[in-house]
Image (tube, rainbow over all chains, first blue to last red; front, side, top):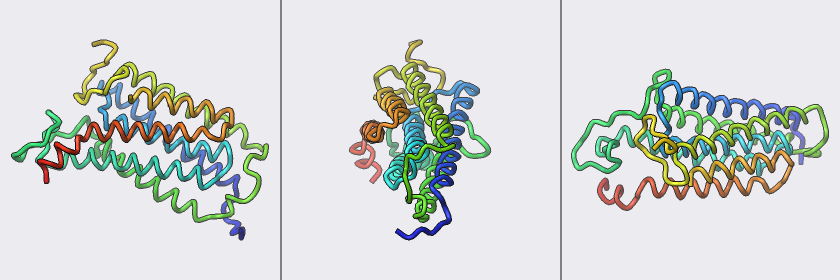
Length: 202
Length: 52
């Protein structure tokens, strides 16, 4: 394989670490939003968070085990999944023939209120479209540089601490999501009514 | 089911911490569960039947 020499495996791992930090930052931001507005995430919102954690997992694999097309594949598949969810939710609030209050299609045009409060002018599911599109574009561009796939993938180096931090962050976020999802939904389907309706308090 | 999906991701992260190579298969399982939840939530039969 010809080495194009632009992106070394180490640089790719640092880039992936930054990407992982960005995803964790978005998830922490979602928690701040949730507790600030006392607005529990709906089913589609939870699925977008699931996709974000999965995207971060692909990046964490690149940091921990070295860059690999398989790890980028995990990022891409997760981002496509998350993108489909966020586009679906955005369309629900654009489509006048869907009543979001009842969750059923409407035969007459209706006014669809958006779900939750807007952040910097956009609602979270629209930010989801922007985020997942950016991930797909970024992963596609980064994969153009083949030099990152050359060399031993698990060499002990100064990045080992970075890798441990990355996976540690990911575990904390995933465990926190598991806990809050359990408190919100239990093991049943999550409610779509918004508000501060914890399963554990019902 | 959503709780189980997130739990799978948390376990996958722990396995990745131990450098277990197949940890990503748990992520795929979580995504498959997510797709099942999504399809149930959309209720394609009702939605498409009326909207189209």
